[in-house]
Image 1: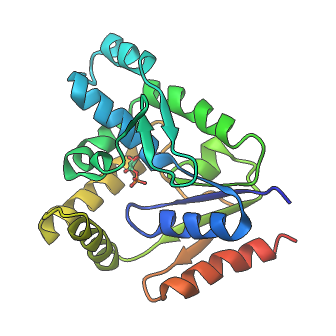
Image 2: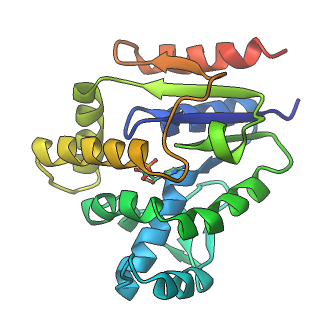
Length: 219
Ligand code: C5P
């Protein structure tokens, strides 16, 4: 079967780890929609776009091409591999205000819908089960407590050679969650038919097994 699987949830709660593992196990394509908003953010930062300037936003969006390297899934902004740069704190600090701009969402969401049009896809983000694919075959809503999320994001950043403080990482996660949940356009919220997976106390294999068990329930 060529299911469409939507995974939403808060920042750094393991959505993309789960999504990637499920896509691998099922032989599906994985799309990290957060990476798409991060690429737009980097593009805007490079151009110095003022988010209050509608024309500058529209112009910047016209000159943007977002893609992923097949296989590795590294983020490609106008053909340039920006995977490492989009994970920086500089991008993390600006991405939620950018993603709250309706013009940005209007240009990105159709692209995501096109990428997933044939099914056999696992897509993770904030509005996949509510806006991008409201008719998804399976919707998972992932959560974890703040301490667990901070710890995980901090180790990722340290492994990538970055050196933010724990307080800075926690503050960024909380701030993004707040902006993402309270924005007017496509706020982060659990779809009514989503299944909640709280992985604070789970090992990674147990978390992935819980996600896969929900796929098996579809058959
Ligand atoms: O998933 P990740 O944490 O990389 O996403 C970065 C940011 O992109 C989120 O904090 C959110 O502001 C935005 N985003 C969004 N809608 C999505 C995916 C991400 O608004 N579907």
